[in-house]
Image (tube, rainbow, N blue to C red; front, side, top):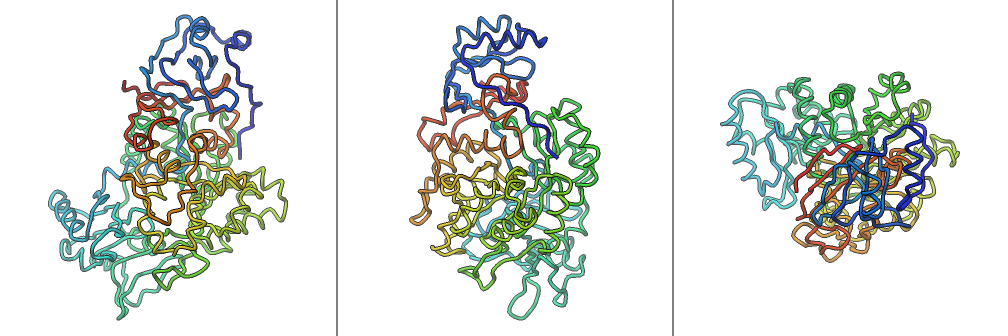
Length: 557
């Protein structure tokens, strides 16, 4: 179900006639908020820069010269950018927002540089939290001197009297101790669940590593956060996101309870970002009837359903057309094809947009095939549906043109490329890198890209995402000799990925994505001009002002 699209109003500079038209609709022509004092990048090709933007009743009512903006905005509060640069509001087109907030409640393993360091952090956390299961997240083994995944033996050496469950940073694998395995009844005789793998050593013994759906064997036995904890996690994460410069989010894999928390916080005025929600498959029917009658102008909207095809590259769960270069496996299908086809058929019947997780080249091909088959060759209907592939990380080169031809949106997270560049070549081999994180190739083919972060897998920082998209080096400036730097995009293209691209991907291009008269007033302002500063300065910039739907949600000059 999509809200009706409104007719897009044309951009106007110094358009007092447009302000008069607003007055005839009963809108006041005094007051509001006037932003000026730095470059304002509108995202509109015909008029890329403006001196000032006037906001009233949640929308841009004037964009153009400062002198005329002041004349039009008598009584408006003026915000001086003090040389900072303003952009259309950045939207994270792929985030797990409650997970961002929950990360603060878990054992933080981001940045641990070895198994020994992981053990030290686990020991310290266990001493500080002497009761209950230990749940952590954030480790990634690709830099570790041990060159392997952690095992239950590594964890048992530190904690052996209560369950330990430590998720890899991608959320597609976990290391658990022997107590956790015993709690779940997992031993050498336990079969792999469909769409998952229990790692075993050469003798067949369980190592403690659980891949994709196998994680649920243990996770289902651990105490879940309380509703109050989940609500507070979402509230804190939303506030953090506004402070980082995000004006909006596309929240994926949204549970029914999480959707209720979004609505509750929005109704209470405590949701500083607008949100498009993509539900878990089993939650779709529960919200369909209610959302069909909802206010289409609400800042929180259910847009569609999130489905899964394969796992992640780092844990070798991404489904590949040929085996991994560093392992005999060719990955996992997290969802059986007949089940996926049923989910897609239901989504089409309910007119819900689909966001399908696919990372490997086989996973992406299977999703594209399934999209095509669901619409039985009705290319026009498929294009109109704007179904999305989430991640689209590894694509066979011959499949890249299919995105544009089918009207499928590539929802991609640039920071994955600068995180994965340290291990993806060994996983894939040089030849398959030709279709890896192929932003420029997709855009050249005519495809639409929506940019996101996949936080808490990544940090969820718009500056890092922008930097990764247009520079394609890690945060130390390293890229590697075969990292396909020609797949970096221009700064104008990077900006579009997080603004107009994200708006198009959620059927909001008539309402958001550019700074134009009549559109909802979203702005992201940073201390550096992202369009002109040196690449290394981009992630060092500071978010100084965020405006979402006309509300100032962050100000830090």
